Image 1 (cartoon, one colour):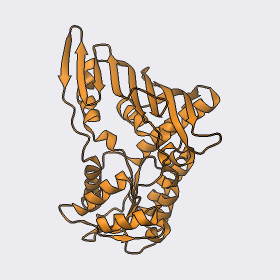
Image 2: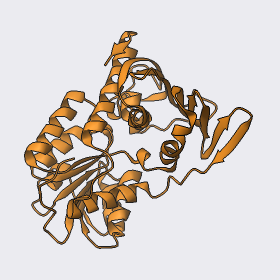
Image 3: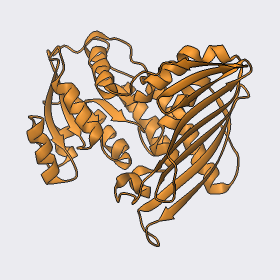
Image 4: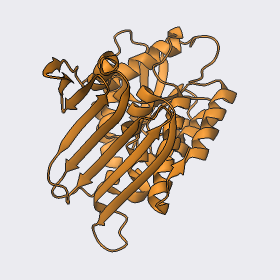
Length: 335
C-alpha cells in the first residue's frame, strides 16, 4: 500500500464509489456512518442508470453517468471500486493516473501483468492502493491464526466452498469474462492459504463449466479443484463450486497437523486430538467491509498500518493464475 509521506491534510476524504451491489452498499453505509465524520461520499456510478439513481438517493449522494466522469473529478480524493472483476484494473489505473487513492475489492486485476503495473503506478504517484481482503479480518481466519500452532507441523489442508443454486442466476458472477477464472474471481480462497502458509512451490488444477446454452457467455455451474504444494511440504486442496449441477452446500476448512487437527464447518470449529474434541469459538463475518473502510481512513489520516499489502494480494493472484494455466494445459505449474 502506498500513500504520500504525510497524513491526509484535508478534514475529510472525498470519496467516489463505483458499483451498486452488496459490497458497494456496505461501503456506502460505512462512509455515512463514519463516527469521526472523516469521509464524504461525493458520487456513485453503476451499470444501470435507474439503479444508480436509486442508490444515490438512498445514500444521499450524486449519481454519475460513467466511472470516467467520477475519477476525473477534482473534488474526489479516493475511488472505491466495487464493481465487476473485469473492470477493476482499468478503473484503478485511471484513478491512480488522476491522482486518486484507490480501494479495490479483490482481485486487483484479472491479469497479473496489469496488477504489477498498477502497484508500480501507485508507488510512482505516492497514492494508497488497497486491495480488500476481508477474509483475513473474519472470525474463521482469526480463529485459524489463534489455534493453528496447536496442531504442530501442518501437512494437509482442505478448503471447500460449494454453493448450489437452482436456478443459477444470470448475473456477472456466472459470466466467464466478467468474473474471470474461478479462483481469480474468488481469490480469497487461495489468499487464506498464502497468508497462513507462505510460499507456493507447485500448482495443479482441474475445472469444468456447465453452460446455459452453446457458446454462451454465461454458465449454469462451475466446479474447480486445485492442489497447491507449498515450499514447506504442505499439500492444500481447494474446492470451489457454484450453480445448478451441485446439490449439497459446503463451507469447510480442515487443517491436519502431526499433533492434531482443526475442523471448521460453517461457523462451527473444533480442535481435535487423540480421544478429545474441543470446541473453538468462531467470530462473526458481519461488519467486515465497515472495518476495512475504517482501517483505510485510519491509514490515510493517521498513517496506521493496514492489514494487507498489494504485493501480498499480487502473490496470491500469481498462484491463482498458475491454477488457471494448469487447468487449461493439464500440466503442473511451478511457481
